[in-house]
Amino acid sequence: MPGFRPMNWQKSFCWTGNKGMKIEKAVKDSFIGVIQAQEKIYKRLNEIVLREKSALAGKDLKAIDSIVAEEEKMIVGIKELEDKKYGLFETMAETAGYKKGDAYRLQDVLGRYDKNDSREIEKAVESLLGVVKTVDAVNASNASALKNYIEYVEFAKNMKEKLDNPPSATYAPDGIKEIKPDSGGSKINTTI
Image (cartoon, rainbow, N blue to C red; front, side, top):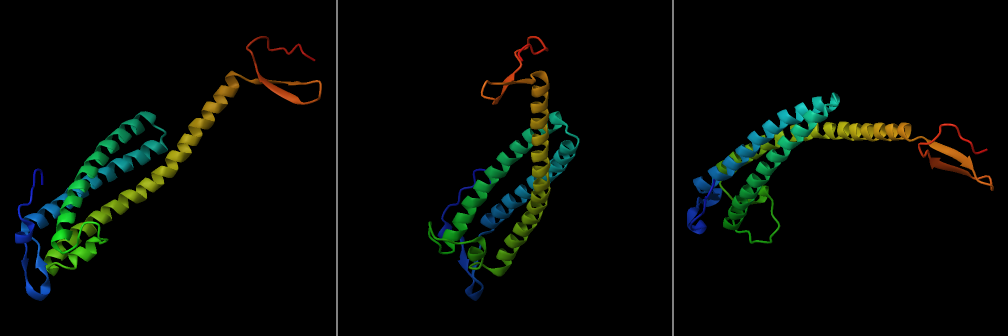
């Protein structure tokens, strides 16, 4: 976790015959701990996204602003945890025999480790993905509502602008209609 620095990774693992390597308990626990911390943040984010959905439906701009600020803070936390998780994953991959720059997935790396260790990590990842999918579904709905809200605000702004500054139409000598914004003078057009 914070300040976690592995010593000698090659000596941290032991072979268990046909089952694969055992993951050092500290590394496995740290990796799972980061995943669980991300899951907690995503669960809180899900609550906030649901509040955002209500605020969007009610067109409550103040609430939307504060909710977006909360979301931004949480995203920073998720990013920090993602960086930690990635560092631990890279270490596990190197210990499993992958070189930096190789293409591999978590499933590939876990396939080289003891099934029990791998299964613990897989369970934590599956649980995290379940929460992320829930947040993503609500967020997709919110994105559509937000787009509609922004279009509504833009439409209202344009209508107000047109009502406050109505255009006047005149025709040039060649018969082409010219639309000019009203200069704010007399409401009676004296040009014929």
